[in-house]
Length: 258
Image (cartoon, rainbow, N blue to C red):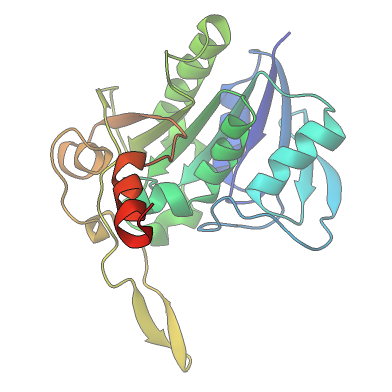
């Protein structure tokens, strides 16, 4: 039987976590390890101090709530709870988009998927793109039906066939309130955030997150698919961060004369 590790960054009480565990029921042994509280925007950070672990139950599945980050959840799940690698890590269902380069690098949901991929485990990150983050606490399971359907189909395929060639992570972004499944295979939009802070309490805080906050991007990108076409974006991701060495070799020659 396949082992499916579910992680998120919205916390143990997220309706997205409940929906995902329900969607994947019957596909394998499901183990849930996830932060106790919301960790949005924390990326792949690890906790330096003590991480506490509490045993709970979600949808009849054994679950563990930790006082750490989504990346902590991967390590604790594989090294301490399962004592082995799972067959797949599924992160989500995130309540909010993860589109564009900045989101990919900042997201705790993607961070958990990155950690899995680094360790050779296939990973899927699923995000439900509510257009106004102020609705986050009002999303119901019934609203997540399309996201649940997509999640199950993709995970079932990967468990049976493996990941697509040369792909380590699939980042799936599902626009809100879709009535049917329309999909684009996309690349990550190379766009930066605008001014995202407003004054508050003698300091600054991030403004309420809206899909419209994302800068326009060109067709074929995750941002364009979700923001402009209102279709599901499936983005294949690899972890190779290496740049071209040839230009640096010329730099060394010019700077150091060697």
